[in-house]
Amino acid sequence: MSDVKFSSRILRRFAETIAAELGADQFSAILALSKLPAEWAKPETLLKLDQAESAKTYASLQAAMRTYYGRGARGILIRVGQRLWDHILDDAALGGKAQAALIKRLPLAARRKPALELFARSIGTQADDITVHTLDLDLLVADHTSPTTHGYSASSPICYVTQGLVRESLLWATGQNYDVEETSCKATGENACEFKITIGK
Image (cartoon, rainbow, N blue to C red; front, side):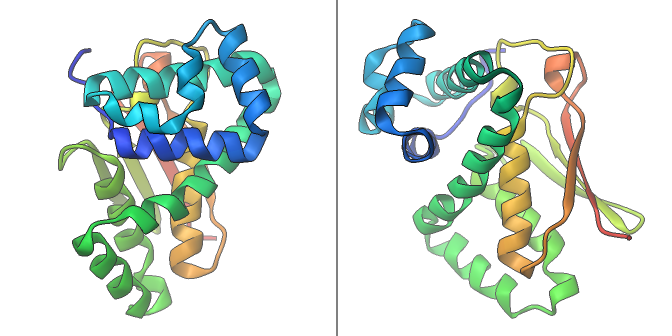
């Protein structure tokens, strides 16, 4: 699974968002209890990691939070994902910013799939890492590499940050909240992490 990659720039933003959500002291405490490097609390140090190391670190940070917070981790990690989306937009290259501006000029009903495609291009390191599909009236996001699950297994889906990112990208594009459910997860042995977005209600 060494082919799993993740952007160190997004990883840095992820660490910053955790610190903002929990407080720097709490973040440091979680790292210490999980026996993770203390320097991860300084997000700029994460920029030095290559894409494979970034994927492992991204997965390890989420695993540490799931262990520390137990059932409460889901809500916290979804919120972190939602807050992370704004940072990803801020950091987007010119092409991404142009695409974002174009999406906002589309009719509301036509914004959903392009917004998810923008999310997929922003998070994935390669073109086919994350794909977006139409399911009758609903939409499906399939994360084929899923750095969140890198090296981890679980009895139920664990990609709460991705869930938050998907939710927030749709809210950003349309001003509307959608039901986003992770229906399969690589951590449970599936081939991809799939998120169903219910629209046809």
